[in-house]
Length: 321
Ligand code: UDP
Image (cartoon, rainbow, N blue to C red; front, top):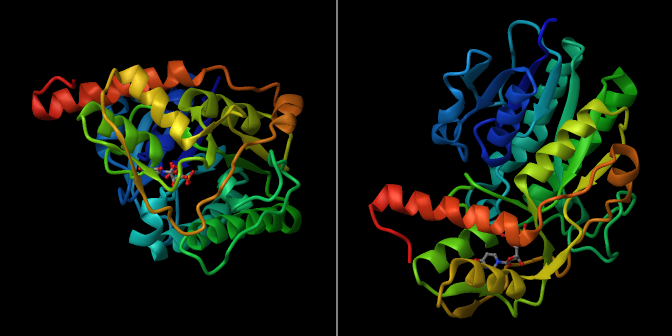
């Protein structure tokens, strides 16, 4: 039987590399495309020797091709950390707009099934809890976060236009906060920040009062949801996230407990438009994909702490406290 061949844009990024790994395990041939702006070759080093894996260095905001057969396109290229929203706003807008346009054009030309990696950020600072897919959101288009939120909202819009107008077979996954091994150490998001601070005995930087909430899912749960969605006939957006909601302070406490760290908490200013509550309604994923998260936060965070601790040891020769 011929293997399916998939293109993963952003394949050297945090989610992308886990997705490439899982697709290889499922017997796919995988083309991993990345411009390494936020991805890294280190993330895919363990995949490079696999005969079914190919890495292509390319910026998807420019004309996109992928010679050979192509069955599925997973468009996962995009910086996604709020720290990046201020640092590289224009590349974020370009990859959401031009990158999605190019990736859809490729899928259309090759009659490949297409998946857009969208985000809970399409709901902005939501006024409805938990957030179902038919909630339209509360987004500040001209705020600092707007570059990501609006790029992804545009990306959803053009994906549905290609679906309706050109008949492209599309999927949209709305990804809620995800964490796990191989997140960037300079990512700037809550979990990598807290883990690194805990491991090095520095204070954990809690933005604002820390009473804002997030629901955090382990990477393996997300990848399982992504694969199920790609196989399913569901063309409406589907939330994939863990509905267990924690305050930021509670996440800090969990990480301190798991790492055995004696670090203190320090409060820093809350970034502009930081959502006060975020929690997915996953009824659609449960009903249409039979999916729900399996990895509790204690287990996933512990695996992630171990990975960061090993990394510190590799880089510095120092054992994390
Ligand atoms: N946050 C924090 N300290 C940090 C990094 C983030 O308190 O060092 C907060 C941030 O203000 C937000 C939450 O943690 O309320 C989650 O932030 P993250 O950057 O992980 O992503 P977001 O969910 O905002 O996209």
